[in-house]
Image (cartoon, rainbow over all chains, first blue to last red; front, side):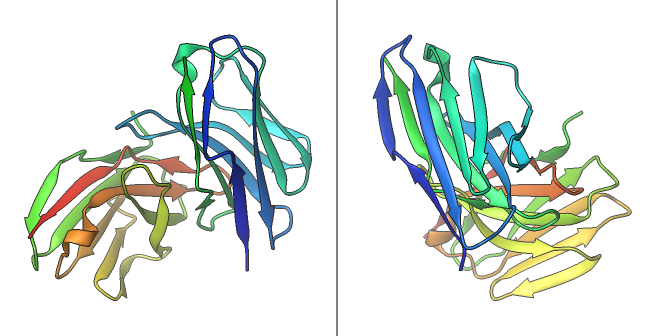
Length: 111
Length: 109
């Protein structure tokens, strides 16, 4: 069966610090991978998606970036965090026209 | 115009009643349609998917799709307090995935 791992579960970072969130998927090949952010009480905002290694589509221009160094690994990064980067970050995987499946999420607080 | 529109609610129903959640979408090329449930502080979990016009039933849940009207709905029969959550509608024409902002449902004991 397929599983998705996302870590850490919670993170508290100072403004201006770097960020690296990692997501890995097991049990499937060449999945589409997605990063979302959800502000408190709000909907899902798609940040990045990837259909293959090294292929990243950015939906929202901001100080975040994403990379896919391996087929089942998706990394979200920032060089300098802003207060507005606080939120619930979700990684998801799926195949075309199939359901997306989410990791448990990372709750990021910026101080 | 948003790709997927949902009434944000909140929707309140008494325990045992039918909860009806609605969703409209704009991309006529959408091929697959999903309903997710999200409890507060948790990640969304898939509860239903539908690909063809008509109804699809799974336990207490029924998804309804009308592609001509670009309309998807979710019915929850015999609503339970544990059904209290935010329900997200999602559609995809392929690789892109579009989520609505969700409808908050409260089931009152």
